[in-house]
Length: 307
Image 1 (cartoon, one colour):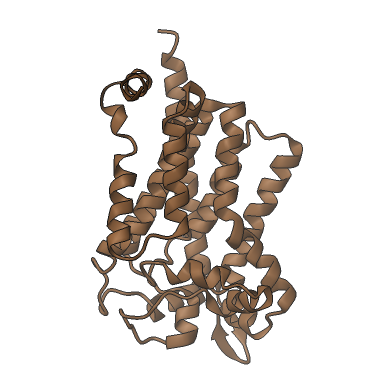
Image 2: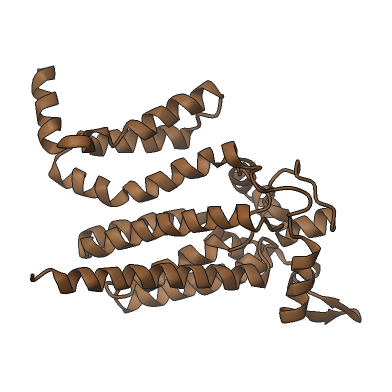
């Protein structure tokens, strides 16, 4: 029976494709030996293996979702290289804030300020909870978009998930080339660079956790590998990617919903004190470039298909 199952798997996954689950199995072992094997690790591994041993349909779905799973693996292992390129001399805090004031500054109490200063002085429980929605659901939105495209436009699903991976790799590299502190860090530590500081959900999301009675955001950001990964805002880039690559298959309702999700995400990134406006602009630029390249490659592939 075991031989029959193995033969079925080899027929389903020829050549080196049979090794698809290996990175996740090795990562699971690595995380367990360091006491960092959480329910998310178990869920991803279980889903991976369930799709891997299924039939042709599950194989197709696994192939489409694989880049997103790789992002989860990379995010969890980023702590290994968390301090590469991150030194007190290289981290941007007040110089980045000065640029923010130069391009997007406001005057508050007679002093040059940022919109973040105003938001923190005028925060409300209602806005805290509203802005927590895109921050708490962005991964579900990305996975939901991928699954939607799986049923409606599989080639576009592949463009979306591989763009998602490319976007994250570009963001992770930028974090080390240009380590930048988020606004909440400045409001907590000032211009002092503390490379041992821990990532935080910020005061607004901490209040949402207190309202929920569950440390949802505290737990999420408590596992972040780096404090100084504000530039670019990948949250905004993710939301834009959904709009740009999902647009062709979305109906009117989903198009409106995706645009509103993106707009709320960009507002939330600033209101929640997580990103400077400059970070948001950079995130929009990264998302636009990646989506543009994905679209160009798709059109190029379609043009070559008849030949």
